[in-house]
Every structure is written in structure tokens, then in C-alpha cells.
Image 1: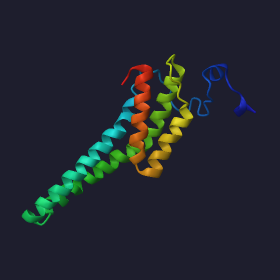
Image 2 (image 1 turned 60 degrees about the vertical axis):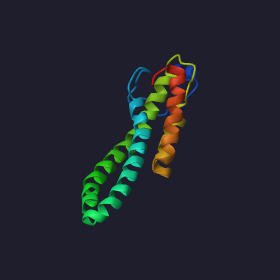
Image 3 (image 1 turned 90 degrees about the vertical axis):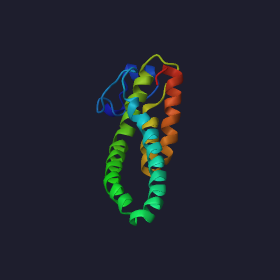
Length: 150
């Protein structure tokens, strides 16, 4: 019965907030959107890094048999994996918190935090960040139109 109770502010906003106070509350001026913007930056860095690795390996193959490239990959791949792991956790959380902040503001766009949080989670889990880049760019585009930041 308690789970069915909606507060007056939830009804006014037009969405249910199933997580309530489990996640932090933020205002629209907070920097939670930085985590959302980190997803396309991570995708771009992975793409550029992959291209450099390919050309570096081809060039290095003739010089040292690829030892320098494999040595660099031995250091960089775990760092990229750790960054990817942090983004896998923080991207859906940040999307939910930021969408809730935008929805609670007086902005013209009112995103449903649960929907956007689930889109972020599904895009990370099901597509290994390839759809996350598109989803995060679209979210940031809509956020910019409504709030002006980023």
C-alpha cells in the first residue's frame, strides 16, 4: 500500500519517482550531466585510440616486431577498461538523477527519469556503449534546448 502512495509533488510533475531518496537529489544547475557527456567522449577516445593502435602496430611491426605497441596496450587497455567500468555504473545513475532534476525544474522539457535511466542502462548493457553514445548525445541535445546547459 505504501508503494502505491504518490506525493503531491509527484502528481504535479507528471511522473512516478520509484527510487525516491535512494539516489541523491540534484538541481538543474548541478554537474551530473558531466557523466552523461563523458560517454561520447569515451566513445571518441576509444575510436581514436583504436585507429592509432592499428596504425601504430602496423608501423611498429616492421621496427620491433610489435613489442612497443603491445607494451603500450598492456598499460592503456586496463585504464580504458577501468574508465569503462566506472561509466557503466555512473552513466545510468547520472542520467536518472539529472533527468529528475530537469523534470523538477520549470524547464519546458520534462523527461521521465525512470525511462531515461532505463534507456541509459539498457544501452550500456546491451550494446557495449555503441547506443549509449547516441542516447547520451540526444539527451544532452534535449537538455540544452530546455535548460541551456551544456
